[in-house]
Image (tube, rainbow, N blue to C red; front, side):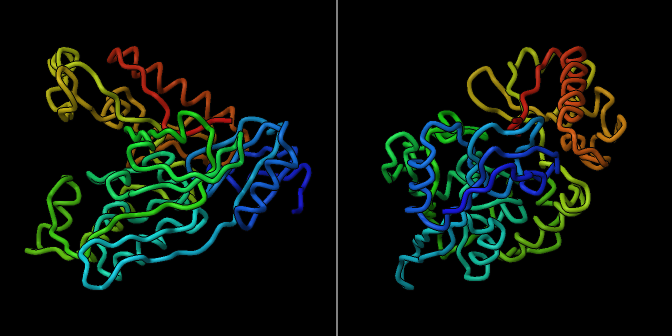
Length: 333
């Protein structure tokens, strides 16, 4: 294993903020990954995939592990409706989604064009257009950082929640691979307004129609992180009481509201940010994307503290106007 000291991390986070790692390694298999853990057992550790949901505000005083775990294995007969595919953690997420759609395997098409790696998908329980990855995950194979034991966690053991999982809650595991449960059959079920509108002229959408529609909507509404560095949706959509929502609707009757559980609804962070006056707002090198206020974009800084300052400004504005404290979806180091 090669260990690099003082490695720049600017190209390993999609906000392109500058920081350096005390130590940096790129293990190519489980054995090398375990070697990293043993060689530097006392060092603080950070595992990064595509870096699409994180950024740095300072140097990382420890070992940054950037795994290079590649490969994919399909385990099902052509006669079965159920399809099981094990995918190694470092595979590109959208390349995998494209593969499943081209093969006619349904389940992940709504999650097209999300940047990042396969291994990152269960950590955040990525979701879009009415779908969440947890609904297609059978199990996750991971290394326990403390014991260096390779274990398998069932869907239930992953403790998935809204943009949440045991991997995010505990920071105790390094994901090696994810086993997905997909289907050969497909029937389009309308779930999300923008997607339904994109498909309204197609009477019986195919799985490829859905993928193409998702890609079209995302490209129209969201910035390319290679052109305008960003981490996608910066804040989680908040849950509030029905009473709180009714109070807001007195002034904003078009407040989006989706039933969650008894007494609670989920509303739109983008709506709140927009009405707080931050749609398309820019402060120096940082701003919200004009087409989607939920996304903070970097117009030209490598200093992560500027992003944090702007984030706090948005949170304060929304809280002062609506009494709702937004929670970041991204990881800040």
